Image (cartoon, rainbow, N blue to C red):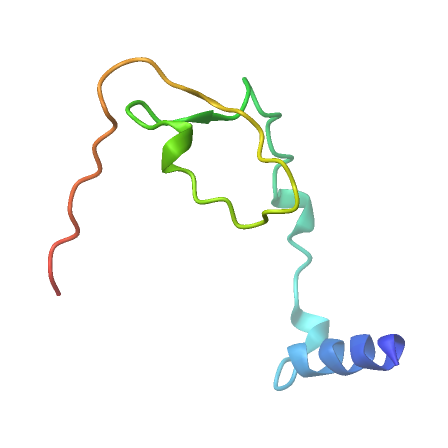
Length: 78
């Protein structure tokens, strides 16, 4: 069933397209850079600001960045 689903999705993905004219762009997508540093909270936030979704698994303890609280500009009304 999984193979049939995969085949159906592959077929639907190219409906209306000439696959002979498609270009494989996978070589142009760069390899992502490795993560530098450890996970952290933005400045001004604490672990009390975390709303843990899964109560059965322990949430890691994170430190906050030093400095003033991170500000995010308001989105203008549309």
